[in-house]
Length: 139
Image (cartoon, rainbow, N blue to C red; front, side, top):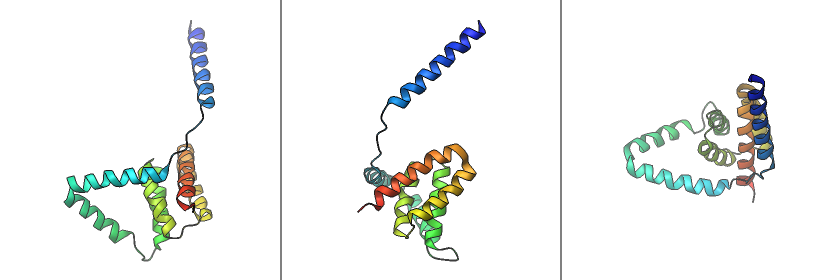
């Protein structure tokens, strides 16, 4: 009986994997996602203005040139967003990293460190980061 249950479970898993592999993946429009995040952020600033003003002040104090360059700080923020599996964080910090002058090669190297430390889940989100970078850096 146990063998039948295991066999049935394996068939279900394999068929779901095969089905998932057949479905075409839709590419995310990160520019549209950024617009949507901006609208959500506006609503939050209206609902909790003091909190969001304080958060903005913290971001302003941290994300500027110092002992670490802004480029380095944006790469750190982006890798932390990746590790947190926060697509909105990734979206925001990819844009900021591009503005700070992060190249695709620098990004790829930082992603290697993120994958080293985070394993398989980080490798999945690393692809999201590269896709967002390519969309935002396209002319």
